[in-house]
Amino acid sequence: MTDLRVAASTFPFLYSHSGLDAALHLADLGYREQEMMIFPPHCWPAELSPDKRREWKAAFDDRGISFTSFCYPALDNNPNSVDRLMRQYTLDRYLEAIDLAAEWDCPYVVMIPGPVNSLIDPPYQWMYDWFVEAAKKVVAHARPAGVEILLENVPFTFLPTIDDMLGVAGDIGGVAMNYDVCNAAYIDEDLGAAIRMMGPLCKNVHISDSPKDVFLHARLGTGVVDPAPVGAALAEIGYTGATVLEIIADATKPENDPDGDIKASHAIIANHGWAPPAA
Image (cartoon, rainbow, N blue to C red):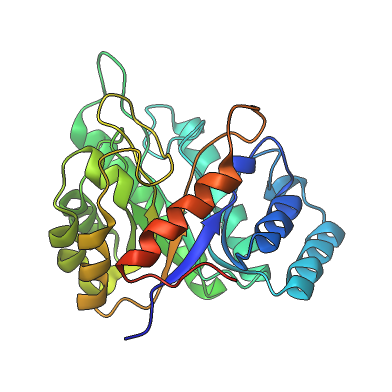
């Protein structure tokens, strides 16, 4: 059996590196398959001129860097906001990300429902309908561009589980799944069962770790994530995509060591069916 592929996310470098510099840095660590975070000032399509897009693409190609996926994190955007202007703003940013993904030969753009963490949230059906409406428009833009939209399970949204994700996927149509292992473990989802439930709809995987008392995306071995059932279930469904080490340790803070976290996490999953780190 072929080892599961391992990629790395540029997430730790949102504020310390440009997207280009982060990608080159990860390539130096041995990761030429990467997930690019779509967020300013790191990598923001509206601020990348046509010349800069071509320059970055040439640099990626020169180093053999390819992208598993683009991820627009739920940090200051919300596709199911009560404000129609925020919904439209978020939609427009997704469309820009899709266009950039097509230019840089990235097959997937990850879409995340908006956060719910206030004392009085909008009615569930309102949020559901707004999200479906936005996602259908995103899919319609992505399809002719040759890009596929993947929905991600996130605990602080109104659709936190894979069962939720599969339900809304049926109403959207034409989407698949980005499974975040840490997000699922944090809410006590059965990881293996969720992966088997997704089956071929599972196209991309994020992995990291978190304790139960605070929500993190830390190095593996520091929290509740057990990669063993994940690797076994991915092998069982015949998964051929990448598993992205999505470590979120802000590289601008001297106490953090994202490079070490990525290497340590890779060493752990290499014992459970994933490809070993590059020599």
